[in-house]
Length: 352
Image (cartoon, rainbow, N blue to C red):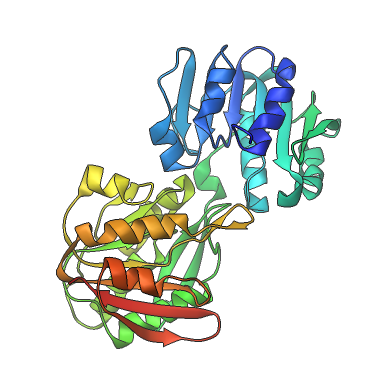
């Protein structure tokens, strides 16, 4: 069994190609750092990976694309790991260009089943001399010695805005490459919001878990204002740096109340803004790359009861084929299906 993700293993096979100061963009396993003892800069957009990073001499960690550690011209070798969302690759390549010193080399590593072959077209758009130098661990490794460097990299310049509406209430939501359902309101969240209009959450401080761009918290408070109510604060938590950036921007534009924090599961909530909530609402993810992975949601459900007040409510939407209902009943309390079709189901449970 491999000690690391396939892409990290493929990079280690080619460690002699890492010369001078290195910057890793898209790190997913901090164990890799001890295998590269010369140190450098490692950026991850995953809050859990960042939190678990060991303190190793010579290594600097960065969380997300707006971290102050991402200084221009700081690296002689840029290693870009292929992201699961193709749109995010352009984002990572632009950051690589900003971090690159004069004469730097660029290495792109990614799995075949996650689309490395198609990603090469994007690579060659900024690095025409890119060539495949290895194929191993179901991955390809590409290298370029000439690519666009030294350009500006402003996260705000990549941010887009779009309007989403449900039950007659509209909000403005931020987007960045790689974020879930960027530029549109996905059908599952739309179903969830409709139930929140038909059967509102109990009044009081709430939490939006796996908040994405912040649409749920912004919409609930906009709906409350439209109904003539004082909006209830809704904290928002997500594991992805782009989600945290977007949710904070969405909250600011929509004058939404609540804290927005990075959190791997509920760890960032219990460690920072811990409080007992009247309600937790969520449209949780179930993919890890191209694979179905419900472990994050299953862990969340096991922890959620401790974050709910007695009789506090969980409102969750998920793909109908996912086996959540029994676990919700076991961890929270009796379950009601508020809405559903062949694709999605909205569950409601009160803490017993």
